[in-house]
Length: 470
Image (cartoon, rainbow, N blue to C red; front, side, top):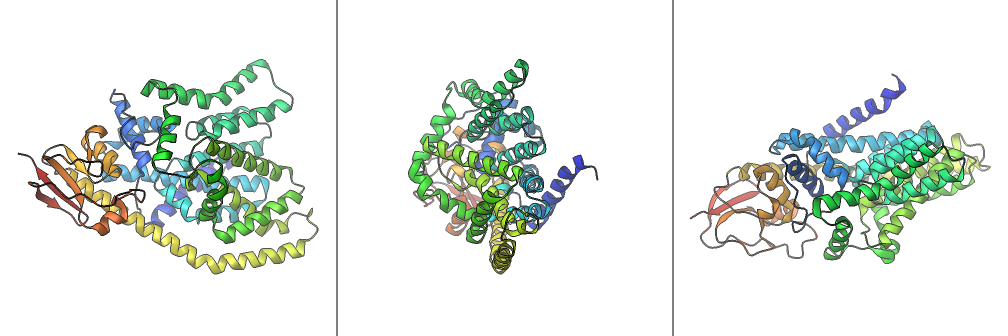
């Protein structure tokens, strides 16, 4: 197989294996659903309403993606959402394959296999990836930029181009672009035309993001102020205290203690290694950590999915701890290293059944969520009159996509008050509400009952449709 086809072929094969292993579960997360909704509205020639209560931070590349895939979406039927969800599987597989490529170019083939295996078995990575969160495409762009730099040191334009795209998904990439540009400037700088291109690419992330906000909302800093307001409303950890007290625990949730031990040992061993390409990986990891720290100190939240790049770096370091003794002659204590790697491998094998149970619970959860969404879509087709009322904000983008109603026109019962007329879609039991319909961050997890005069029109296993249209 030609080398240029290896990455896409492996990616497609792995995505399909994940799709089959997870029972073809297709669930699309709240933020991505809003990106689809806004893209569809733009394609229809209307400015999206990004100030709907509870709407997520808009990300320019996600909104543009929504415009591109909107023709495939139709009315957001279960089949269309399955296609969107499969893109999440592809993004996850891309991250795994690119991590293996980075490891191959820096730490060797054995480390590549181990690093890829570790990443693809981390439950949070799969949980966010298979629900099509934008954080996996962001990670893929970072890994792609690192792979290019490892292939051709000081590559310049292609690395900055990938970081520009990443900077339209997460602001940390803006800082990484500036840091990379500064590193390029240390060496022999190219001609003026290339300098202009590099400067434009490095500054493109914040400039394009701000211009997008200005065009769509009239506020140049809409995303920044909205994210800070959402962080405060949801009481998410942030700032220096969040970094010190919460970030280590969140990384632990991604890697688990056995991989964290291996990552710590691998990082210490890499400090002693005479491997220039490994040092490039180490510097890139340190830069990513510093960029996230600065963004968090600036007021953005410390949550698990924002730490996935550091989780991927931990998988790389752990893979080196497990395999580096075979190929790195610069380490003087090879036998002790091999023995330690053997003990760590044994620990990973002994804990593998528990890791498998986590993945099995994830598969069950995704399947249950898919059934919940499919049943909601079926009842939404039966609503006899408006306005449509849903339990909370989680269902708003789905119902808006299915019905064509603006998100602002859909009433959320928890925000109240419930209108005395309309169609109310509510969970059939508290158990089903707790399983997916409610958000764990909801302060009040009670579902208000239908007002007097609402009659049951239809029901499924998980949902009830009550309405009053007179």
